[in-house]
Length: 180
Image (cartoon, rainbow, N blue to C red; front, side):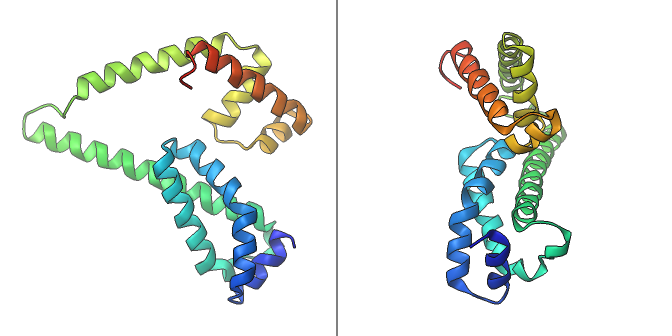
């Protein structure tokens, strides 16, 4: 059964349909969330929240406005962005509190230096990719597009984008010393 049909059944409270839908969409949901949130543990948590929300709000799905998968991935993207914003806001609150207490945030300087070095390292490794690989990797990992969306945006077959991504990520992994 397709996601659209399953989602309609889930809206009616069909638990078996939800199990099938869960199996169908949990991978893409986690993948999208992981690209936005970055942290694996946080990503798992957000993905579970999205799937729980899916069960609770399946009746809000309108098949006339798009496919079930795009609706679900939109929910996932919104929830992931919310989590990133929330974490950023919490960090900013901690920094403000530390400034008010007239003391620097814990390891703030060390964290900033380390983050700057890591960004520079990744930037240099990205420069070593071919322009086509760099374009695909940048769209997927920095702008949050799925491989299919990258293919559509670049007017390329999905297989070509997947090959570019695989080759580009392999090169990045080598450049970053196998830690990526």
